[in-house]
Amino acid sequence: MTTDIRLAFAHPEERSLASASADPRDRISLRDHLVEAEIGAFQKERGHRQRLLFNVVVEVRPAPAPLDDDVDKILSYDRITEAIASELAAERLNLLETLAERVAERILAEPQAMRAFVRVEKLDIGPYKLGVEIVRSRAETALQVVGQDGAEAAVHPLVVFLDNTAIAAPDLSARLDALQARGLPVILTIGLPDLPRPETGHRPTQRRVDLLAIEQNAWVLAARDPRCVVMATRTEIDWAVKRGQMMVWAPSKMVLDAVDGPQSRDPVALALWLAETMAAERLIVHGDVSLPAGSRVTVERA
Image 1: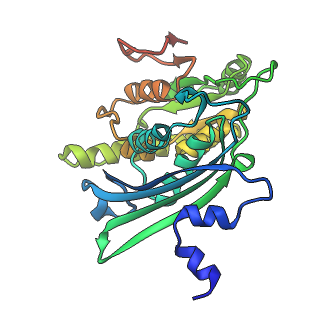
Image 2: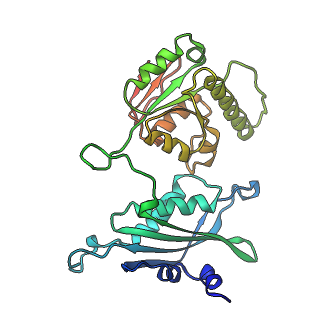
Image 3: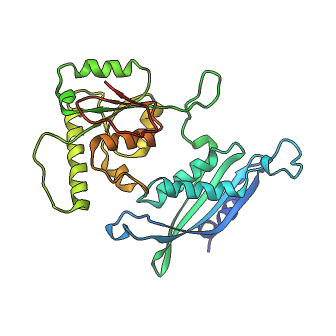
């Protein structure tokens, strides 16, 4: 077996050693961390938990001063297991690749972490392991929004609910101008179209029908103004928010993939859930609709 093939199947720690730079770094590792989670792109994988095996190596910046046996001066092993648990709890994912990316990104947010090797394997698909391994460095992670003082700044978007009257209004562009003038990214949400839709008589399937009908309405809004770009995944929404852009939310994927997602089919309730999920500055509601009570986000009627 050649060295390249052997390293391809070696533990991430050996791969880290083999690709080390001339400026060596310290390493911490997590071996054979076994968890159960629901994950997978196929319908047969929905509603079933399966075993996932994690092996992670993190190259860390050497401590600039004596450690003094102080746990607060190191990257704790707990931060690795917490990164895994947090990403699994955030939403249901289809791909191991996505999970590995997000775990690596969360680990590299730690100030000491410089490079992360993340291997994730499924153990219950067949008489073998199926997995993915990635290597990510701090230099490759997405740019963060930085404030004028050089510190990382959190971005809190506006989430806006538009009823069908607002979508069809002649002054829609002016309303969007006013929203953008607030200086924050804007996530537009919409309700069901004023059209008949199939009635299944079955709550789970009706939920999917209604979510798809909302997405049809999102494309109607997209046709009204070029700023109304339809987005469905958390990744593309995060990307747009970091760049201060406006977008329209197509809810099916995020709602159905959420571990503890909303069960309501009410469009305003879905908008509120999104606002809370995105830590929005506020939810602005257009139209004669009932405002939700008990929100963790400020709700404003337009």
